[in-house]
Image (cartoon, rainbow, N blue to C red; front, side, top):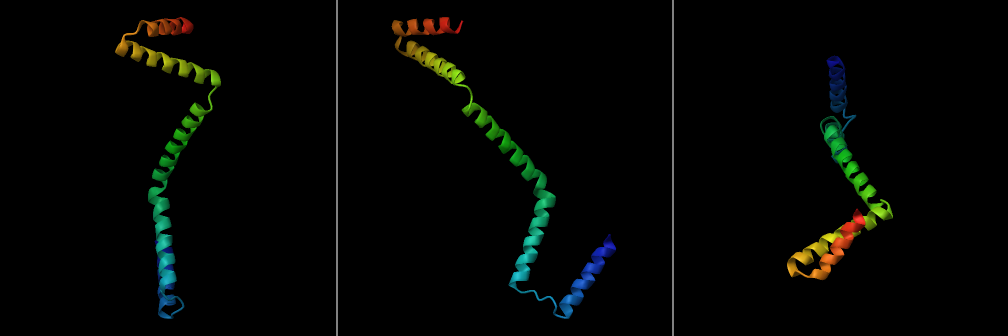
Length: 109
């Protein structure tokens, strides 16, 4: 394996000495981009895959909660309304709100 790299290095040196390969701006940008892609694949691949997997799970969870059944949305709204009424009952101490909460609890049972 190391002899292969040696042959490539020798071939590169010959190409440079005979001016077959000239390091102008385009070649340097191509070389830097190739090194960047190589390092990204070898050292950052697992990290990027883990991040994309976690994002996929988050999007899947948001999708499920957004497109759940209308019945579940109605029950959630009723529960939120009941909590709101309980908070009003505690803060204003109004008896009419207590009747709505009792009816709500009877509806759930």
